[in-house]
Image 1 (tube, rainbow, N blue to C red):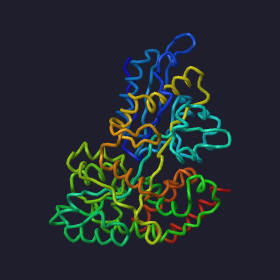
Image 2 (tube, rainbow, N blue to C red):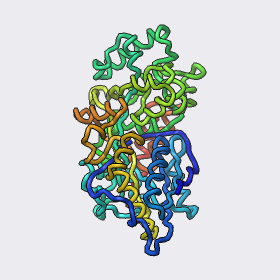
Image 3 (cartoon, helix red, strand yellow):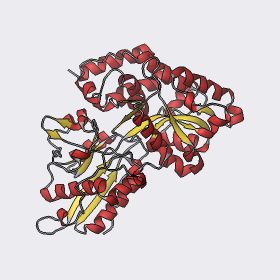
Image 4 (cartoon, helix red, strand yellow):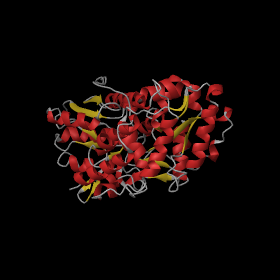
Length: 438
């Protein structure tokens, strides 16, 4: 039986890899209802980059389980997944499987989340990957994967510019490299050093902001529990933003135009064509780069996101999103949903797809063999940072709902176009955080 085609798709965001061992499910009769009737599983998910791989996995699973019909809808990137999910539930078209991001989402979706504490993959999850979706009552999400982000850079351009990326272990070293690239951009064929997607508030309000707040809070859960925001490293955040803005591609030559640059322009039109040397983005972007230019994709790496004087030779690494199951669906539907996810991440066939098709970095044990190691250089770099302990946590899923994008992300756009001062941005961030936590 064929997979129902995707209903909706937008440009990206975030995110990448999970897997698990043990209790591998064949996905056979376990997914039939008591009468052997057709069981429909609706999946509403955010990761646009994983769309094709998820469709393929669903088709394979359906072939093994002819009584299961998996229907996938994808909304991500330029669209607000959280808002789209709320609309989905409000319309009465509640999905069987959907995504949550951390403690705030677990609270927001209380009453809709199936307790997954007894699922076989739980004991295979790496330490720390379940904390954001764990409460005293249970475990309410399955990790997608692990992802990391920093400054993706073009190795060939760096080589031509005479820059050794191994020396970029501090903010000062990064600034020096940027200035060198800018001075040689004519010879290197560059439009600019960076492409900054100011239009994508998740890039600034979630990911960039995280570099400062990950040094203020130890985890997303601690951020979620914080009543006030100190924002103690806001000046260091400003330095990191200003460096990018100063040397960024500007469509019409003005800072404000940076806010018109979206993910597609940043990754596909500028970085993947060799017109910029660096972009702030994560390993999930590899597929998009490869789709435009295989040579540039193969010669890309990830540099640190240095918070000056705090954590400099590190990148943020974490779980981008979790699979959750709607507890209000009937037992046959929930059983099929659990069986599909368990099969995808724990069976030999599923694990191979997780690595080769999804290009995920596993969040589970059981992927230790050489054949199950990440194949692309960006994921390999993320693993290297993680193995060397050069990471900072993802705390943005502990922000108040919508605060990162709709408050700080929006204010960063105003700061870029000159309509808001940095001091006012900081004061508004602190004020709105406290108001949300009352």
